[in-house]
Image 1 (cartoon, one colour):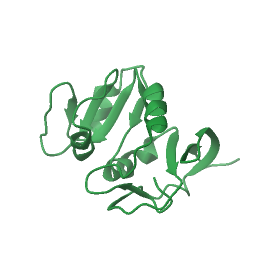
Image 2: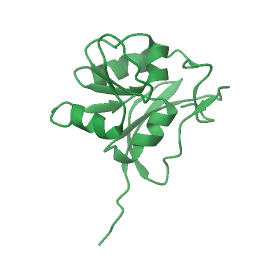
Image 3: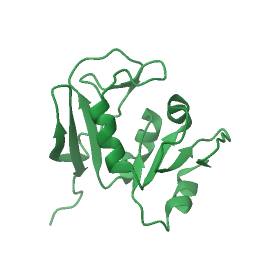
Image 4: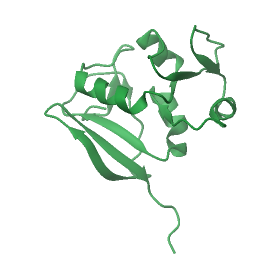
Length: 151
Protein backbone atom coordinates (compact mmCIF):
# COMPACT_ATOMS: atom_id res chain seq x y z
CA UNK A 1 0.00 0.00 0.00
CA UNK A 2 1.07 3.58 -0.52
CA UNK A 3 1.53 6.11 2.29
CA UNK A 4 -2.17 6.99 1.89
CA UNK A 5 -3.24 3.28 1.96
CA UNK A 6 -3.94 3.05 -1.82
CA UNK A 7 -3.57 -0.43 -3.33
CA UNK A 8 -5.39 0.12 -6.62
CA UNK A 9 -6.48 2.65 -9.20
CA UNK A 10 -8.92 1.80 -11.97
CA UNK A 11 -8.43 -1.94 -11.48
CA UNK A 12 -4.63 -1.75 -11.69
CA UNK A 13 -1.72 -1.54 -9.26
CA UNK A 14 -0.69 2.13 -9.47
CA UNK A 15 3.09 1.51 -9.41
CA UNK A 16 5.64 -0.76 -11.03
CA UNK A 17 8.24 -2.15 -8.62
CA UNK A 18 10.19 -5.02 -10.25
CA UNK A 19 12.13 -5.76 -7.03
CA UNK A 20 8.86 -6.18 -5.13
CA UNK A 21 7.50 -8.48 -7.86
CA UNK A 22 10.71 -10.55 -7.64
CA UNK A 23 10.44 -10.82 -3.84
CA UNK A 24 6.74 -11.77 -4.10
CA UNK A 25 7.55 -14.47 -6.66
CA UNK A 26 10.33 -15.94 -4.48
CA UNK A 27 8.14 -16.06 -1.37
CA UNK A 28 4.93 -17.37 -2.98
CA UNK A 29 6.25 -19.86 -5.56
CA UNK A 30 5.21 -23.39 -4.68
CA UNK A 31 2.31 -22.22 -2.51
CA UNK A 32 -1.34 -21.15 -2.79
CA UNK A 33 -2.42 -17.68 -3.87
CA UNK A 34 -5.92 -16.56 -2.91
CA UNK A 35 -7.43 -13.53 -4.58
CA UNK A 36 -10.72 -12.07 -5.64
CA UNK A 37 -12.08 -12.11 -9.16
CA UNK A 38 -11.22 -8.47 -9.88
CA UNK A 39 -7.62 -8.97 -8.79
CA UNK A 40 -7.33 -12.08 -10.94
CA UNK A 41 -8.80 -10.26 -13.94
CA UNK A 42 -6.32 -7.41 -13.46
CA UNK A 43 -3.46 -9.95 -13.62
CA UNK A 44 -5.11 -11.79 -16.51
CA UNK A 45 -3.71 -15.27 -15.88
CA UNK A 46 -2.63 -17.66 -13.13
CA UNK A 47 0.85 -16.81 -11.89
CA UNK A 48 3.35 -19.58 -12.73
CA UNK A 49 4.47 -22.00 -10.06
CA UNK A 50 1.57 -21.26 -7.73
CA UNK A 51 -1.84 -22.83 -7.17
CA UNK A 52 -4.47 -20.10 -7.52
CA UNK A 53 -7.81 -19.93 -5.74
CA UNK A 54 -10.32 -17.25 -6.72
CA UNK A 55 -12.84 -16.30 -4.05
CA UNK A 56 -15.94 -15.16 -5.97
CA UNK A 57 -19.70 -15.27 -5.43
CA UNK A 58 -20.41 -14.75 -9.15
CA UNK A 59 -19.62 -18.24 -10.47
CA UNK A 60 -16.52 -16.88 -12.24
CA UNK A 61 -14.37 -19.53 -13.94
CA UNK A 62 -11.01 -19.41 -15.68
CA UNK A 63 -8.59 -22.04 -16.95
CA UNK A 64 -5.92 -23.13 -14.50
CA UNK A 65 -7.53 -21.77 -11.32
CA UNK A 66 -9.88 -23.01 -8.63
CA UNK A 67 -12.93 -20.84 -7.95
CA UNK A 68 -14.70 -21.05 -4.60
CA UNK A 69 -17.84 -19.18 -3.51
CA UNK A 70 -17.06 -18.88 0.22
CA UNK A 71 -14.42 -18.95 2.93
CA UNK A 72 -15.76 -22.36 4.00
CA UNK A 73 -15.23 -23.71 0.46
CA UNK A 74 -11.74 -22.19 0.46
CA UNK A 75 -11.00 -23.99 3.75
CA UNK A 76 -12.11 -27.26 2.14
CA UNK A 77 -9.96 -26.64 -0.93
CA UNK A 78 -6.71 -25.81 0.89
CA UNK A 79 -7.39 -27.55 4.22
CA UNK A 80 -5.43 -30.76 3.73
CA UNK A 81 -2.58 -29.14 1.81
CA UNK A 82 0.78 -28.55 3.49
CA UNK A 83 1.60 -25.53 1.31
CA UNK A 84 1.24 -22.01 2.69
CA UNK A 85 -1.73 -19.89 1.63
CA UNK A 86 -0.96 -16.30 0.57
CA UNK A 87 -3.74 -13.73 0.25
CA UNK A 88 -3.06 -11.49 -2.75
CA UNK A 89 -5.98 -9.07 -2.75
CA UNK A 90 -8.04 -7.12 -3.39
CA UNK A 91 -9.38 -4.93 -0.64
CA UNK A 92 -12.54 -6.95 0.03
CA UNK A 93 -10.58 -10.22 0.19
CA UNK A 94 -8.04 -8.66 2.57
CA UNK A 95 -10.89 -7.46 4.79
CA UNK A 96 -12.42 -10.95 4.84
CA UNK A 97 -9.22 -12.90 5.47
CA UNK A 98 -6.81 -10.72 7.49
CA UNK A 99 -8.13 -12.02 10.82
CA UNK A 100 -7.26 -15.56 9.71
CA UNK A 101 -3.65 -14.74 8.82
CA UNK A 102 -0.70 -15.94 10.91
CA UNK A 103 1.57 -13.41 9.19
CA UNK A 104 1.16 -10.23 7.18
CA UNK A 105 3.80 -9.21 4.65
CA UNK A 106 2.91 -5.69 3.58
CA UNK A 107 4.74 -3.75 0.90
CA UNK A 108 4.66 -0.06 1.79
CA UNK A 109 5.30 2.18 -1.19
CA UNK A 110 7.17 5.27 -0.02
CA UNK A 111 4.99 7.87 -1.72
CA UNK A 112 1.44 9.18 -1.90
CA UNK A 113 -0.51 7.65 -4.78
CA UNK A 114 -3.92 8.56 -6.18
CA UNK A 115 -6.32 5.64 -6.30
CA UNK A 116 -9.74 4.20 -5.58
CA UNK A 117 -8.96 1.02 -3.64
CA UNK A 118 -7.46 0.98 -0.14
CA UNK A 119 -5.85 -1.53 2.21
CA UNK A 120 -8.08 -2.11 5.25
CA UNK A 121 -7.06 -1.07 8.77
CA UNK A 122 -4.98 -3.75 10.47
CA UNK A 123 -2.72 -1.87 12.88
CA UNK A 124 -4.66 -2.63 16.09
CA UNK A 125 -4.54 -6.38 15.41
CA UNK A 126 -0.93 -6.84 14.23
CA UNK A 127 2.58 -6.03 15.51
CA UNK A 128 5.56 -5.28 13.30
CA UNK A 129 8.27 -7.92 13.78
CA UNK A 130 10.68 -7.17 10.92
CA UNK A 131 11.45 -5.78 7.49
CA UNK A 132 12.65 -8.51 5.11
CA UNK A 133 13.46 -6.05 2.31
CA UNK A 134 13.86 -2.28 1.99
CA UNK A 135 14.72 -0.13 -1.00
CA UNK A 136 14.49 3.58 -1.78
CA UNK A 137 11.01 3.03 -3.25
CA UNK A 138 9.42 0.56 -0.84
CA UNK A 139 9.78 -1.53 2.29
CA UNK A 140 8.26 -4.95 2.98
CA UNK A 141 7.07 -5.10 6.57
CA UNK A 142 6.42 -8.39 8.38
CA UNK A 143 3.64 -8.38 10.98
CA UNK A 144 2.13 -11.03 13.23
CA UNK A 145 -1.16 -10.92 15.10
CA UNK A 146 -1.14 -9.31 18.53
CA UNK A 147 -1.97 -11.72 21.34
CA UNK A 148 -5.54 -11.36 22.53
CA UNK A 149 -4.99 -12.89 25.98
CA UNK A 150 -2.07 -12.29 28.28
CA UNK A 151 -1.54 -14.16 31.55
